[in-house]
Length: 443
Ligand code: DOR
Ligand code: ZN
Image: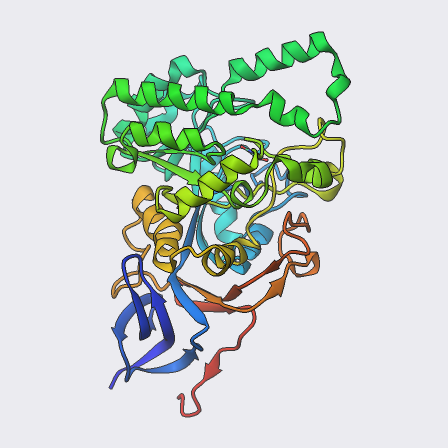
């Protein structure tokens, strides 16, 4: 009988079915055999029933900060960001282009790829940023980019009037696009209003959400859906990034949702915290789009449970403790989420009753399909041996255990009902709380 390089045995959670016991045989980085029993391996990982084996999580939205300038390496780099990803059960990740030397052309992306390859065990892919000035580079960038990122607000942004042209150019590449939807005009109007009323609200935790209200997200989502609909192009796949307002989902559903090519994602912070939490955590919970009220949070969580949201993403956006401790108006937006991604998924399953098979879809199968990665996303013979193994046991998040360079977590001190026990990348197991046992008669 064939002896596999590695055999992993336990409860397997595939996108459409859970198998109470199965053995996964792994060789040369691939899944080579799956059986109920009888497999032999040079190395065996035998998991207790309190563990769940998922296809390796794919995070299609993370900011690892590094580029060839090294200008933001003090926040994170490919090495520390990958370590945080593995710790959180993420086996494949797509990095966002908003670094000091933004990923706006193929050469910049190629340099990022080279750096990532030398520093990371996991597969890191890249989005190219589409701004008003580089639409002509879209085709050329496709040799280095797995997809494109369009920001409708802040630096690196694209004007709404350029959306149809950008969508046309992206469609021709067959690559997908992720769109950050906040309406620049509305945000600017609010800023101008603030000049008139004065800064009396500055420092107030409501200021940030007032400047970037739900209407800013909804207005931008409408414009994106209009441009997408006008172009009538069903070959183009788009993802509305980090929706924070339930009505965004309603609009996306009306436009036909993922069946019509319009997907959406949600983040751990928008499902876990609400605007009130800012009064205590201040700049540490400042994000774009901002946290919303409890009603939106609960509605999004319920919609997630019903399977109406396509992806769970980290939107890992590390900034240092010193930066986040600044007054709210000055603190940069974004929170680190990679280390705790698996803990958060465990919370969804064990505390909020989310079906594990749904997790397998939103964290692996759906992102693989969206990105066009046919070699991963489910546990099947022939796929890459990427696995995320969660253990059902109580753990408290503590900054000493984090791998992210920024060294803090929005979940610090919170007790989660589960954690990552192993992350297996291309057949290589990274152990966090368990051990890999070598069989006694291994050659
Ligand atoms: O809060 C955010 N931070 N939202 C974004 O879209 C960008 C991110 C960052 O890069 O820090
Ligand atoms: Zn982001």
